[in-house]
Length: 201
Image 1 (cartoon, rainbow, N blue to C red):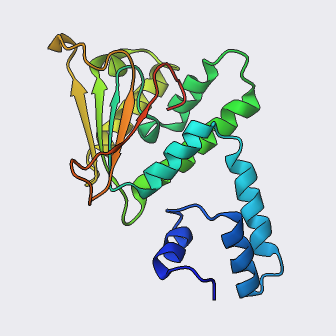
Image 2 (image 1 turned 120 degrees about the vertical axis):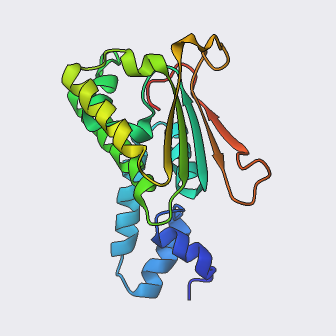
């Protein structure tokens, strides 16, 4: 009835692929939703518009990837942050409002859902040792964040590694990066997102 493959429809239903307006309009008509489905689609688009363009692209890549590799020399990666840690990071942006902070924190927590899907990506996160020792927020915030990293490393698809301070390596110190890969890719990591200087990872 929709004119799309079962696989595409299933990906939209599972939240692994965004629906465009044509899809939402046709599905609304096919289901006899009376405009309700299209209205929800517009609400979703409006919500997504609050995200920076690169973050919306990254979130879409994360939803589709089979494996994610991230290197972070400054802060805990967004996918592994606690709410309190994320809030402390966002509050460091000059002139940001409380409303913007909470909206950004909510968006970050929403992104993390990809890790807990029944079939989700495998995440390899490598952190510089300084990430673990840099005071962020408060001692309580850091304690909670360190406990979460330890707990997440027990997850079958999440791997957290730390580069020792005395490694003498300089590669990657200029900024963080994320590599996303798919099972059919040679090298399993053909799409990259570089975030030099951004605090919104």
